[in-house]
Image 1 (cartoon, rainbow, N blue to C red):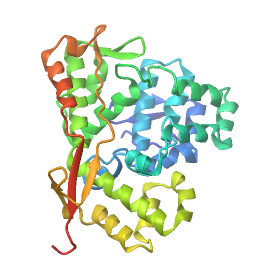
Image 2: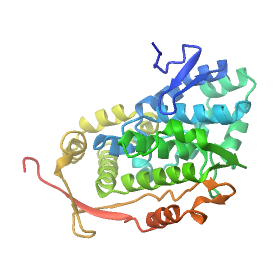
Image 3: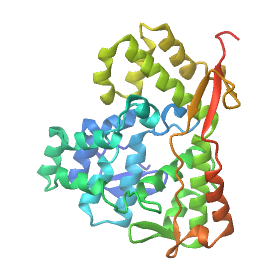
Image 4: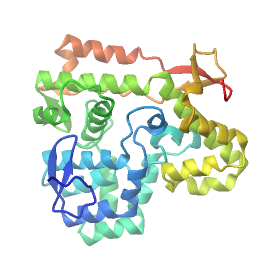
Length: 330
């Protein structure tokens, strides 16, 4: 029987979404077992939306997936393997949900964690440099980048999210077998590139849905209200897990905080979406991930009408919504 645990205590680790057995080097084992990376097991990748929908995987599963794909396509690039493991370690609880409200940057927090003694000492022990990994995470690489195209980090998000939601036509394990690279950007044959485009479109439609926007807004409001009630909690928020944050909010001295948290955890049916401006609360979409792979050396939307339509439709997605929260018991 295949061992499926991801404790990094066996010679190879099973990545279930891509159906890959991946051997881990000693430095990778130590990084995956350190507290900064294990914490990601307790952060929902989909933010507050994980409390109301089926996409519930953690940042840890995402990280294992990104690492597995990086090892598959760039087996000799040790620094990039380490960067893949550490690329999300600065995320706040519930990922992006409260980042804007708190004025935080998970990129800056990630750099702090990589420089921390507990992580930097592991890297140094194995001949790796924390500063160099931070440079890699800020450069254009196959892992991530700011220029056009899709890199491994976002590819995993698009495929994993839509797989978790059951909104896929071709299994991710089959999709990755059609992928190559053109420079630092993901390329594929036209059929595979179109499947990736469909995943991009479906993922954007999920997190742009008003109910998911409302969930993030409710959590943000609960956190801000908690800081009003007890400003001393601000210093500890960065390193909390999702469960620890929920416990903090559920036990708040503020009735507002407790009610908002209860809506997310036990009564999401109280959320009622309204036309924009027609509800007591407004929510804004953080960003659209309008990314596409290459088909050969050109964006797939230049070659396939369906891909062009899908990319165009992303720009038309509503970027805001209004909602009300019904009184308890209604």
